[in-house]
Image (spheres, rainbow over the protein chains, first blue to last red):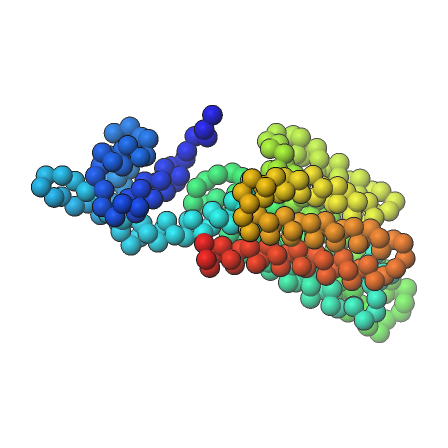
Length: 89
Length: 222
């Protein structure tokens, strides 16, 4: 059985999806992140407020892009996790 | 007691330098593990950080004790006073050093064997520390128990390496093999060949340098 993800893991997954696509619709994030619509909406709002992602509207569709803070967090967190993961705990 | 009895004369003082370096390395590893815990709140990283902070404090205690003993040796006082002071300093430094190292290793054993029950972990700590302090050959017993604990952790690092096949997990495996080897050298010290004290100190330092290399590599190249 897969381990339950904590909030940071979920945020990291969202940021990775957004980063990998450059510009992504909410429905695509929803599909990739395996979250409920309500939970995702709440997290996207939080990430936007923290300036980790930016929201854009194009012809009525909402798109998300990774912001500098989000990219910085993602890069630093991945480096730290690589170190702790090397112990395998 | 390796410093006074078993260390070659030419190595006196160098061991404290090596222990200070180990202190700094263990502190950095503890700090970055704790940083991961602060971000994702996963207890296992708290315990990983805790074990390396314990190792750092342990080596700091050992290095300071050794320096205090050297200073006492060169002090111009009566030899009986000198020996009493050295004996007292050695006992305090030794107890702090072994207690912290054993706590650190038991934490690593608990992490690798997934032991979560604090009663079991505290039982290990109390038994190992008391047996080592009360036992008649304290230092030998400490080295043997430390080696046994590491022999329980190393297969975990080996499995981690075979599962991931990456350089970082290989460095961790090799580092802990070197640290275990250092305990083996310290055990061989009791055969009377004091060169094993030098081998033990160098193997130990190389082990921690390996862990530092892994840390720097991850932080620099990700």
